[in-house]
Length: 363
Ligand code: NAD
Image (cartoon, rainbow, N blue to C red):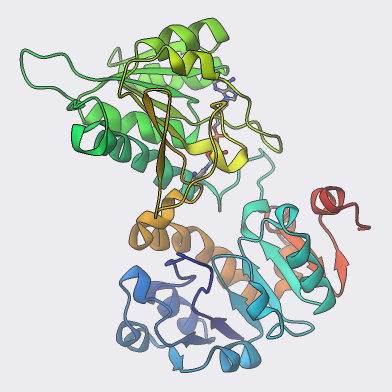
């Protein structure tokens, strides 16, 4: 099969959908990998590395799209790419079609077979192609939080771990899922005092077993959140209710009573945010002030570390890509319900009930 990897065109998107390791695997299975010139530069991967792994480099994105049976991307196609898609072509990428009727309509009109990373879902409800980005965002949260706690960045002028004879920072993590547990691990590593809240006590049991008293676990209620947040130097919002808006857990009057110069990082901002005052920001202007605190609400945190993010993403997508390429999309999906759940459009028809519901379209 011919597998094409164009350079991402979305603003500030530096990830790429395949690494040299992926090229090596796919060409080893007898496939051709066609990569647009400079596609990996934003992730510190050169054309030379791709060529050494067996890829063919194309100067023009049009040729990559025209010659490939399967297109691998990171983000959904943008309007400048729509005309390149052709009937029967398979597209495997993050799509988030519920948020873009325009893109959904383009895929239908161009009769693309589109499989969305974010809806590939196991029987147990896990999202294996989303998890690595939650890991990245979770590990990044204490790092950006620590940066903004510095006085030079407008924060309380506090070192997370303190030094001997001074108290460490109080870090509160709300949500003990994938991103929350990763945030906790880094905050503990920095030497902070960490309080972890979740409504799911099994999650807290797992954290308690892992950290053996090094992390305070608290059942999440409005009362407990208030107590923890009032004492916090850094609050990390990491909650998710699958398929729904994030619940508002930190109201603005609570923020008004927080310590001056405290930092709030809302990882859940892509689902509306779990602090009342959260609104999506970008890497160019990541923070804003609310009362006397700093809010960091970047909706695509992994974009700050594209090198790590590209490797994290492609290591989970590659097994699926290999199966689609080896067996053809139809047989690969029939053999694997997890992958089947990712199918969003085929032959001009919408196959995702949640996308159809979001736009009032038939499926
Ligand atoms: P997850 O499902 O692994 O964990 C969410 C946790 O929140 C669960 O343990 C759940 O029990 C808990 N929770 C739900 N309601 C709660 C409440 N009221 N109080 C305390 N805990 C509660 O989800 P995840 O993979 O960690 O993702 C979290 C959020 O981060 C999602 O919205 C995801 O889309 C987002 N995310 C954002 C970025 C970014 O760049 N900003 C990157 C990756 C993921």
